[in-house]
Image (tube, rainbow, N blue to C red; front, side):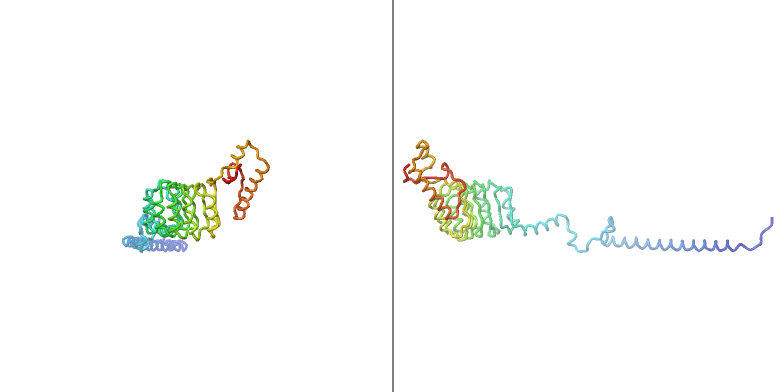
Length: 308
């Protein structure tokens, strides 16, 4: 066969040119992409070396501030310092670490030691010697049966800003400790002396408290009626006075008198007894005290001069 010398088809020449242009464009795009990627990798490597980027987390950029690079423990310590300066109340569970705990919280105002029944006078002495003890306003020592008047005296001297104190079931505290609290802590407003072995000797010191509002004398067997009346009349600021189970009354119980007569009273004797009971109840009402349960075997005691 012979050679074909005819001209190429125009459609074929155009398509070939298009393919050539596309191939050339693809080559240029690939070269540009390689250049960009190389520049990006080079920049990222430089940033990693300079410490601006994390090699493991490219999306994370730590702050250049050196304070932001603190460890977790240092961060927790910072929060702990802030919390220690803002805490106002504390209720520790163990007395062994009481001194260390109190040093960490310099702005305490309320200290509840009712869960530390084994606390001793030495612990109270250490507490009163601390600088933050001067800011204490409320102190609860319920059921701390090992403390005595010596420990309470140290608290009275070192914590003169006390406004509320509870000595409930502190069986080692007597008239001396209560008297020291009343003399040294002039700002007392709430005083709980329930079940203490106190007598009438501490009442004159309590009468000197000008701001006393709440006084609780539950189970104080050594206080008689006459001194309670003097206490009520002497404390003008007293708003609430809780008295329960005060059994020290002379004259004997009414129930014993009734049983000694075989359970029978003549009209004249019964009249005298009822007049005495009504006079007592009327006086209590005038003083703002309401008796909710009247029982001859618990609450009424006859005068010793009355003859059944």
